[in-house]
Image 1 (cartoon, rainbow, N blue to C red):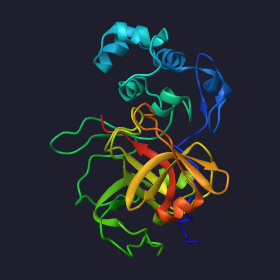
Image 2 (image 1 turned 120 degrees about the vertical axis):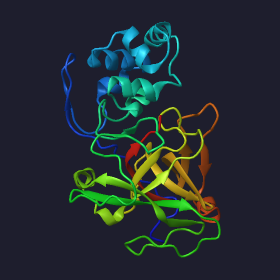
Image 3 (image 1 turned 90 degrees about the vertical axis):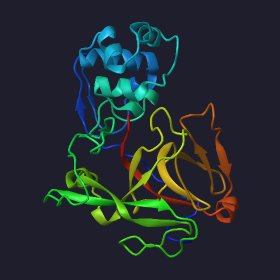
Length: 285
């Protein structure tokens, strides 16, 4: 079996850290608490709005919708919204937590604001930069793994070969605070980025979102997020183990993208490989 372990799956980590929340005070360590799992979307939205100190009208104004929409969401008339990412950003919470209840209520992951002609303004431990800007001592560049039909024998810094149809970009890279990687215990040479394409992971991750992965980890952890190669195509999905070595691929946008199931034999014949564990993501608004 190759280093990419056909059909193997990895565990997810969105820059989680222990948090002490005000109001309903409790200490939340890694992962999600029982309270989070029991809360539905409307309850999480109300909790996020209250902890941010916003009124319904104030939140609606920041998101660009009317107050009635926020009120209806909090009353449970709609379990989800196409504005989830914008609502999460306005409240200062993790959009993944708001949408699904998974992960921490607040995280250190980065959300990109709307791009300008001079580039993107990054919020968090990042700065506006261009390719000629020198790295600070506390920064590293993460290269992108990208689709490139016909590509073979493209290798990572560690020497691991990528599946056919993928390569490490010569030009595209992300500038990241090295502490983000250090907190996860990831050697910089094992961290890479991939880009989300399409609407399968909406509303948490719209198209063009960036996901950073740890290419050293390919262990199975059901229901977590991974980057994988599928017949030369890059995909970001939630993965589950199936009996006999098979896997299930799940999207957040399940109304348009049904679950996909593959046996171990199909993983081999269709060149399905896990590339790495997701530990950080950014969202373009």
